[in-house]
Every structure is written in C-alpha cells, then in structure tokens.
Amino acid sequence: MKHAQGFTVLASAVLFLGLASSPAMARNSHSDKGKQQLQYPDTTRVAPKLDLRSAKEQKALNEGLDAVNNGNKAKAEALLQPIVKDSKSKYAQALALQGLASLSYKDGDIKAAIPLLQRSLALGVMPNDTYFQLEYMLAQFQLADQQYQASLDTIAKWRAQGKKETADSYALEGNAYYRLGKYKQAIAAIEKAKTLTDKPNPNWNQILMASYSESGQGGKASQIAEQQYAANPNDPNALNNAVSVLMQANKYPQAIQLMEKARASGALKTESGYVNLAKLYLITGQNSANPKPNALKAQQVLNDGMSKGVVPASSDNYMLLGESAELADQTKAALAAYTKAASSATTGEAAMRAGHLLLTENKYRQARSMLKQSVAKGVKHMGTAYMLLAESERGLKNKPAAIAAMRMAAKQPETAAKAEAWLKKAGAGK
Image: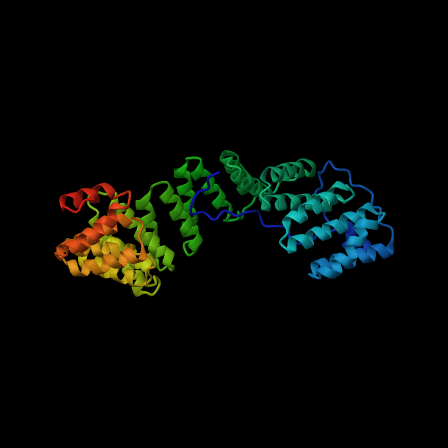
C-alpha cells in the first residue's frame, strides 16, 4: 500500500496507558461506589457476579496492580503471576492478566500484551465498565501492532456490545482503514469522529488529508491543509502538511504562496522550510518556458536562510544554490556555490558541475582540476565525467591524457558509443 508522502500519520490512537478501573482497586467507600456514573449504561452485556472472596488474595492483587502503576515490574510479576496460575477466582485472574499486559506494554512489547488482554477478556468476568475499557485497549494495541483488520473487528464488537460511540473510537477506525488502503471508509470514519466532539484532534486531519490525497481527491486535501494552517499559523507541522498536500496536488504556486507568507511573518524557521521553498521555486522554473525568475527566487530564499543562520553551509545546500544560479544563467555565482559544495562533499557531483561550467568558459586548467576531483570522489554518471575530463585535456592540448580519459569513458555503458566514435576520429581506436 502506498502512503502519501510528507504526512506524519499516527501509528495508532493515543493508547490507554493506565489500568482499567475495577472494584478490586477501588479505595472508596461503598456509598461512594454507588454514586459512580456508569460509562456504558446502555450495554447489552449482562454484568457477571464477582467471585473474588479471599481478602488475602484481594490484598495481593491490589498490591500487584499498584506495583504495575508504580513501575515496579519485579514486584508486580511476583504478585500477579501466581494469581494467574493458581487463583480459583476468574475475576482475580482477569485483573492479574490485565496488570501483566500493562507491564508488557510499558516494556514496549505490545505483541506480548495483546494475548494477555485477550485472555483477560475471554474469562468474561469483568464488570461492564472494566470489560469495555479493556476491549478498547485491545483495539488500540492491535492497531499499534499493525493488526489493522483485527483492530477494526475489536472496535466494531466494542461499539455493538457497549452501545457507545466516541470521537476517538472513530478516529482509531479511520486510522486502521487508512493503513489498509480503504480510503473511502477512512474518510467516513474521521468525518464521523469530527462530528462527535467540539475539540477534534488536529492529528485526525493528517489521516483525512492523506486519505483524500491517496483517493485522488487532491483538491479536498488541499482545502483541509490550508484551513488547518490558517487556524495554526505558527505550527510548523501544519505548514509542512499543507505544503505537502499542495505539492501532491501539483499546486506549486499555492504552496509557494503559503510558504512565502510564513517566511514574511517569521513562521518559516527551519532549514527544511527554506530548502523546500527553494526547491519549489527551482522545480517551477525548470518546468516553465522562462526559468530565470523562479531560479533567481530560489537563490534569494537560500541566501536569506544562510544569512539568518537557519540554512547551514552544507554541501547539499550549496549544491542546490549552485543549481539555482546555473538555471538563472549566473555562471559566476553557480561556480562559487559548486566550488563550496565540492570542498566538503563526499561525492564528485558538485565538482563535475563546476568542471562543466568552467569548460563552457574555456577555463580548461581549472576545469581539469575539478573534473579530476569528481572522478576521484565518484559520480553517478562516470562516463560523462570522463568525457568532460577528456575535453579539458584536449583544451590544454594534452592529447595523450585526453585519449586516456576517453578510453575510460568508453568503458561506461552510457557513454561507450560516443567515446568510441571520438577515439576512432582521433585515430586512437582499438
């Protein structure tokens, strides 16, 4: 399944971290319990009778669950594992299994937590509120473990038996559908979630935008993205999501406008923000009949970011600056940027570009130096680098060196035909 690029979609809903409440853990008086409001008042599930009668066992259970909450794993396991193994009370076993599941979750072992929760639920002895809290927790764990269909099945059962609808449960459902590539269902679930609360989680829009984008509804995704950014103009994630969606919808002018607005207001504060804006200008320029205006703007954005100390003087950033200057026909600026990029680059790409530009200005000696550097460091198109090197040697009237470089170019599949033709013409063929 393909996922929309640029989005940070949550792997799961916010997990229920604590232990589900239960009578065995309660510290309130009997009269207080009577005043507690039921969380699932309309459930069709008949609440079972509790079979925990041993005061000693209840004390051990409470101490074990307290140890879970306090992060004392050794004590919790020492108290709860014997209850799971030996207790005659199914209710005590169920609570102990819940506690052990929470321990596994806290250790980051969701795969171990899931079967423990399933065993706890299968005993069927939990009070309704506790039972449904655990069932909901199971759906969250399954989602986090990439058991997307199982999570959907669990949440459907939770909703059908518990007779309860919540915004978070539909958001969880939408997330699972998105992961399964069922974008229509994901959209419906997230939209439903938003109707059930006056404070929708901003992260839900990430799933919604990604689902619209993946289902070919880029316009709706863009609309949501722009609305989200308008509501949170100082949130870099909102800006990044908006720009990503607009780019996927090929709405480059709108993406540029949004980022320029952020730059003008001081909300564009990261290297990635400046670099992405420069790339947007560069891409737009490359696809236009007159690339120079956009290429100049790409230069201006990078220089602005570098002057502010936001964009570091890295080889990648100087490479991008060089590409922008070259597209704008500013050879001197392009050469300066490529030279700076080449000095710290781990590959020879920048040196090769600099060498090529120097050749166009008939600066053969400087070109040869750069091209030798490009060959030494390695480039993606080695044949091209060797052919350029040969041209620089030819310009310096060093025919033997030119032939040697062209013979290297002839060994590369992409330039073999051209190089062999050159060699034949030069009388240096095989």
